[in-house]
Image (cartoon, rainbow, N blue to C red):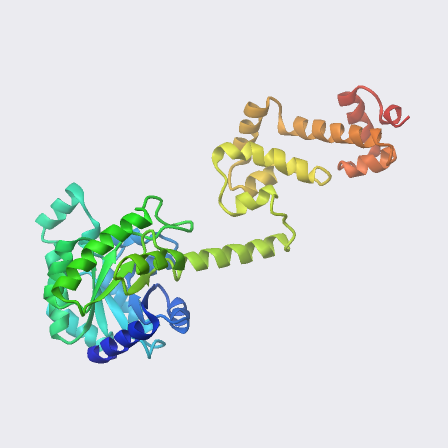
Amino acid sequence: MLERNYILKVLKAQININGHIIGAASGSGMTAKYAVMGGADFVLALSAGRYRVMGRSSLASYFCHGNNNEIVMESGSRELLPIIKDVPVLFGLFASDPFIHLYDYLKEIKKQGFSGIVNFPTVSLIDGVFREAIEEDGNTYAKEVEAIKLANYLDLFTVAFVTDEVQAMQMLLAGADVICVHLGLTKGGFLGAKKYISIDEARRIADKIFCCCNEVRPEVIKMVYSGPANTPIDMQYLYKNTSCQGYIGGSTFDRIPTERAVLNTTKAFKSYGSLAADDPRLRVLEGQMDTKDYVQFVKEYIEEHYAEEIQLRDLALFAHISGSYLSTKFKNEVGCSFSEYLIRFRMNKAEDLLKGKQYSCKEVAEKVGYKDYAQFSKMFKKYIGVSPTQIEE
């Protein structure tokens, strides 16, 4: 465990020299290790990180999938603390947990080797009727403020997530070392937030809160958490237009890079590196296929691979849908069965090749997927109306 005064001294030195600091909310020892190697100044052990590793959204922290504090205690003490030695590891504390005595639990957090705490999951991200209901049941932001105050008393380093000036004022008075404006779940990637505020709205929110900080405790460290800010360019805008001194990212540092790396590596092995950028299979592999696009996928695949053996059931399996569903949908939209469409496409292609006078009838048959010339000739006459040799002549 690193001492609070030492942490503050190092972080402020980093701000003075580099202009800003970075916090990484990591869901595993691996992402924490490489985030620190990349320059992260502190690591946050959050239940959201563990859910991201499971392939879930960070929002899962707000559902009854597990005990948030137990998840953080287990993963933090087993995966993060043993390998992260030179930067502080913070415990993501769910302060409203009815099964803990807050002061005693904070002492246990310190005993385990965590250098500080951050209030997460935080009630500040919940609003509306549900917020009113949980507050009536005693799950309030005031509990989080109390946790920060007690942690400060125990000389633990503290990061406070806030979403408005009132919360910022409460956390400032509680002695928080860092006021971090939580801008919402991170946009981007496959599991990222689909609705988020604009970067300029983020600027306005952060600026109001930071002005409050500068008036009450100008020495407090001021940071933002993700939301619409998930690139260095986004943060450059916030650094230049507010008094922000740092960035805390979760999905930015573990989920989004992992999604891209695993997806692209798997695609490379799947295709032996041979898929062209416009190959219809890429859209399926990248999860970009909507239900309405399945028929178009089949048609494009036939156009690209008509010379090969094509089975509708294989295409259905590839797209993770049933063969009967794809067959019915194809016939409804195209007006004929998959087999008939494929044969007609091949015969039309064969007719074009024969008219070009570059290939013999047998060569054309092979180029459109027929090894049996007799079968090819029979199908050609049925669909084109004349034999291949008549076109050849």
